[in-house]
Image (cartoon, rainbow, N blue to C red; front, side, top):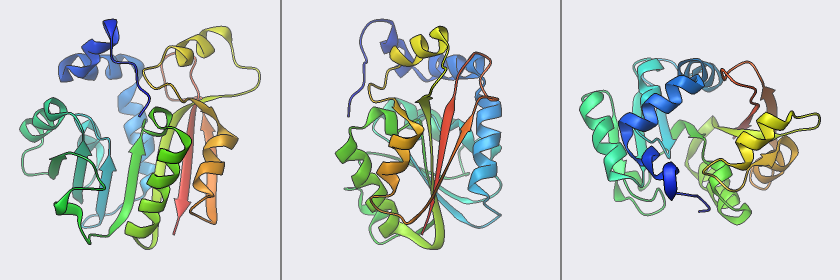
Amino acid sequence: MAQTTTGLKSLLSIPAVYRAQQFIWGAPKLHALTCSYLGLGSGQSLLDVGCGPADIVASLPGIDYVGVDFSPTYIQSARVRFNGRGQFLVGNIYDLPELAGRRFDAILAQGVLHHLDDDEAITLFHFADDRLTPGGKIVTVDPCYHEGQGMIERLLMDHDRGQNVRTAGAYRDLALKAFANVRRELRTDVARFPYTYCYIVATR
């Protein structure tokens, strides 16, 4: 995983700081939009990979939610805030016994791919293909380089904690290594600043 965690960026490992930064950035709108791409109804299941403090739970219907993150601090914050609304696990999705044999209606990787190199991202898509129910989907959301991008937006992405920001085509190509049905959408209507997100929706 390629991620910068030194200097001021280390403060983002504190849940309250991370949550405040995300709110300023426009997280409530982002979470609502992501929920619309997931399209989950009550009782369906979601695996949230790299869930952080799991703030998206506040925007989800009553589903079977499982959030996984490497950070014990993020997960503890999620457990306190969303007690009774899901299962929150510390660790690696590939190793957790709680996930062994489980299948999900949807898998979410919001803000994850741009922290992964190509091989790691392809492994995640193959994992999703194995763990989704028939007709299930994986939704990924990441910052995206594109033609005609303004200097400020590119500067923001160049200094993201994740060191593998890609173009929309590059994100789609990674998904196509595991899925035949892949669509991509660019969204510029989410953040409070000039910023482009790439949504990838791959259906099993």
